[in-house]
Image 1: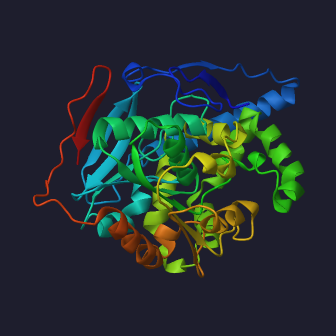
Image 2 (image 1 turned 90 degrees about the vertical axis):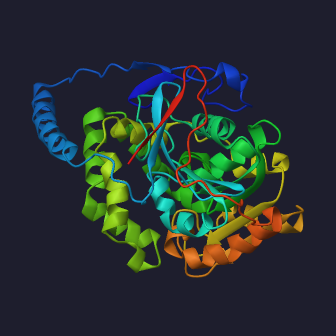
Length: 392
């Protein structure tokens, strides 16, 4: 179980099923939550260790707090949308047919900086920080795929207000699939998936021999994460800039892309209050629906791109093979295997991604920008219970 337990109200329960309530009943509704009491230490020596550890972590947290303020990666206004009582960060650029970019685990809208620079020349581009990541709030909730699905659905309804092309990476890809399947009709014009995961966490992947072999370790990690001092130690060990850089060097094939800005993009949000609880909740929460369960209900054109050197979702995994076989059985579907690319193709080798994406978008939308492009897009008038603002 995650360190916090929350019931996601008004249609965002962490289980399967369509969005349960109309959108006009969901705006501005806060999410109830409750804290799980931590068990008392059985032995005095354990208690002393925990006290000492908390003092160290508290000092580290105070130091981190001095540098954890959101730093805009893009030279764009950082916009804030209040969704269900929580602040959500997003950026927008360009004009024309709308494209919405959805990042993966631990990332944020800044991860799309290379794509935004290219796509905004012809399209109206939106990039959103999912709740719990980036500069968005990190409230104590039960994080699940359905929560992010509802967030993107409501964002499309409030800001885009016309059929949009969804582009997602990793967990963001699975979120886009769920929006396509469960969202209201006419919300999605086309869907682009970059190295889509098979579930929110590896517990949902039961048909891959690698996951089966590692399952005892996954159970051990779950056990560790249930003990808050151990979870804090694991999280703080994982999120150090040096460790993040080492992980990224394994995830990216283009080592030049693993720069200080990328490391900072992942590190800074990990310093925010609540980041530990998001980490625990995502790794221990319900895995959500599988892509192959959703595919029979996916509507509209579909473009799937896959880095052939993905260490997280390998090209020979059941998830990747499911998508590779789709063009033979599903119309308006294209699969492209990208050579010498890792888990994040849009940032690893954006040139290869854009070589596939731009012609596909051109055929889908015509790629014609509006005659006049707004230089400072304004948020639409907000409904009661929700709001939007802009900051530099």
